[in-house]
Image 1 (cartoon, rainbow, N blue to C red):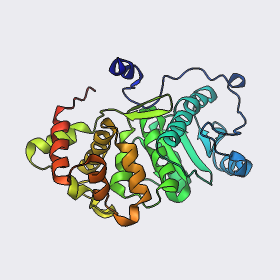
Image 2 (image 1 turned 135 degrees about the vertical axis):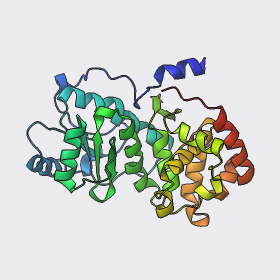
Image 3 (image 1 turned 120 degrees about the vertical axis):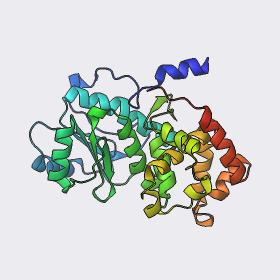
Image 4 (image 1 turned 120 degrees about the horizontal axis):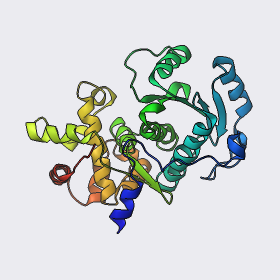
Length: 301
């Protein structure tokens, strides 16, 4: 019965529950007040941020405050409010129920662009970003901003929200775990304050590597630094990290691993020790079991 109910909530191309018409004053802007996960938003200067954005953006943008975010969108107000309620607010609530403890103490801007053309146009105007842009969107930590081509779905928005929150809660999180956790939620369900990742488009990359002999073990993944993780083998690294997180999730060990790794990072910066502790097996055997688990997964596009 649980599996049947779970499938009801899985979205094929994005993460979140089905969007419904916004009920706030007919779609008007609202007072951010206290967010669902309990953060006091009175510390944020929304007026200054909104004023700054208005000076840079055109009049077709809707600018709304919500929790630790200011959302700037060239979608309709109704569609923007729907994304805030059904994706941003739900994800925020789930993350702080499942993983994170420390909350952002500064405002983060989320840009929601209605199509690829406006996404690329404003990425260049605002930040001079023109090369190697993901078609989905990206997070820019130095500017505390997320830029989303929301026309591709909301899965990447939840992915980038993971990065935005985790940098406050687990400051030194290694790239493999940061990207694995974010990628896990590119396709997910959010129900009763619980977020679950589901099989997505990264699976074939991992299964192909197992078939053609190019697979490298978990021990190599967790020893990558930024340069090697994001280097020539980055596509495989993302897939392996993502499915390692889903493997832990499916065994109900991911939350335990996250908190143990975060709280004891200085004693093992790779995470190997904590993987072995939460699974109860050595990395070599874990890798063998993980590979067999991956082979059995099915991805339905």
